[in-house]
Length: 369
View (spheres, rainbow, N blue to C red):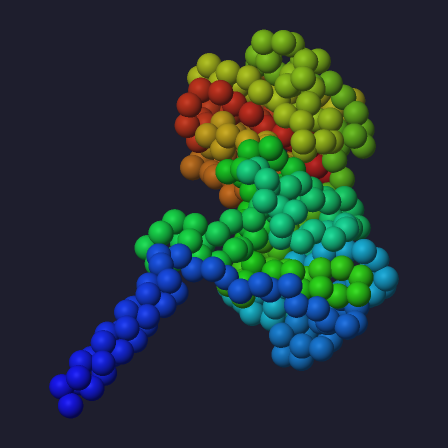
């Protein structure tokens, strides 16, 4: 009997050791994510249709923008945005519209140009599985419709108290055409590498807001009236210019060249004004300023908008203080009550967000409606 108990005790000990080893092996301080290379027998569009209640909003946007064929026939990678992402975006937009006593907007009636741009961010040329994004700096991508620059990088989440010990996720970014990562808008995936007949689907996390951080600003921006600088013409002068001169890469002429990816950069030196002499006097009660590509501390924070008919005696038309651009390449429209036709208009900048170097992508003087 004692001999039997001895053997049973030894067997029990062996079993405990085996279980302990297995448990240690399973919970060894890291998490090995399951392979997500699942396959769907249809095309990418059909995959979205096969998930009722998940991608309904995305399908509405795709159908409205005429992108069905792209997801049916073309070789593409889709970063799929689920219904909650659209709900967040529309809630933010309509909350703001309600405060302004405006009717709500929906995917069926929002500005098609802006919707087309934002939907296209998520459809990338070619097949881009997660293992193609393992480079240290990730991979530059192009959107299928406009060739817009996006970026993706494969990372691992932290798990079990260890950095990068968790499942693989793709960091998907809208680069905003900037080389500086701090200006990018980021999102991450919830699952990767769903194969379809004509491409791949990576599913964006549901806490992502459709359009990245542009949805509200794109759909609340009201375009200004025609630009008098180009409509009538005239001459630009500035209080002081870039060290390289007006025609240099960041000289004053860049601020009226119609390209928000160039800029005028100069030392503030306490004050810097930009003046435009129209060929003929015109009433302007609207003007715009557009933020430049980087370094928000260089943005103008306080200025006056002024008019004159002799270039010497100025009338203040509008005063701004404590102003902040929320984004890079962001156009802002300013309105005043001017009803006088002036030949000269100027923006006189007296304060920046911080520091002493000023920059601005674009300035326009706009016709009164």
